[in-house]
Length: 344
Ligand code: 2P0
Image (cartoon, rainbow, N blue to C red; front, side):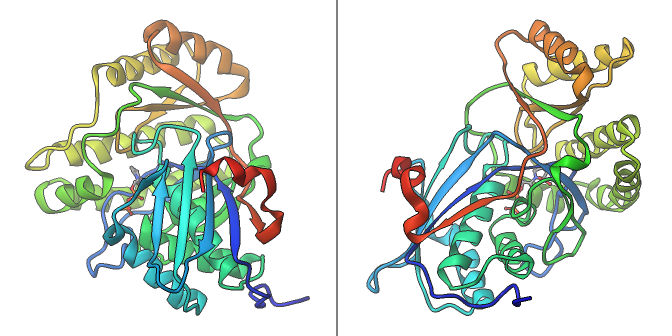
């Protein structure tokens, strides 16, 4: 068998489709040392149907790295640690220019940075001459972490784990592992979030008396959630998911200044899930750095869950998703029609 990281003739461009990584158990806070290493273990699912499409090309000799999202040029400083790490890991002297579009609202608590940096990392790896395979994925996961730790998970489809302190994520199982697994994403708003997750987790680390207890407690929650996942025990996993996001948000709320992402609609949706569970219907919500509520349920109960959420909050758009496949990468001339809509 050929080594997975065998170098191949470099391509001048690559198009990558990825999907966001939703944490069932949360990463919130970083280890000290500035390398974007997570302080807590996260267990996540890559969502089907929410897509990021990124076209990466080799920049001209007189150009620097540049990224556009939805046509908007992004802050170079935000991307510099990622590009520097990508060049180091991929042993590449290149500069990169990327253009990315999301099929869902960006910076609204739907983990667009996870799919965005994952796509960028895979595209840069391809242009650096790395072949397809698990070793390339592992290097891309490590580079993506410098952009956004959750992006190290989005390099894979299905279910993933990013252990506390780890440099890269681990693929756990493909989407076929749990065929009935569904997530209903309820959009409380399409607006951009009030505070970046990076800023908010730093405020929590430096300004919340509950940060250290959160990190300590998260070890037990993630261990038990992984066991529940291994047993495909929806009830147990759902209960632990709820503990994880509620404790994450509790630690953030207690920061000075406080971090409050919830909107009235978020609370309405949380209460609708509680009412479903009181009726014996499995519906376990989670929230990230934003007001959106994501509800885990099993396929046989999906219709009841959707109906209850719609009735509770008719103005909220619902997106039904499930565990998705891994990224799709097309190199050079294979890009074809898919990349034509990306505005370059
Ligand atoms: C997660 N979130 O595990 C957690 C739960 C939001 C809440 O990862 O600072 O964009 O760029 O590494 O990955 C969102 O934060 O943060 C996130 P950085 P990231 O999905």
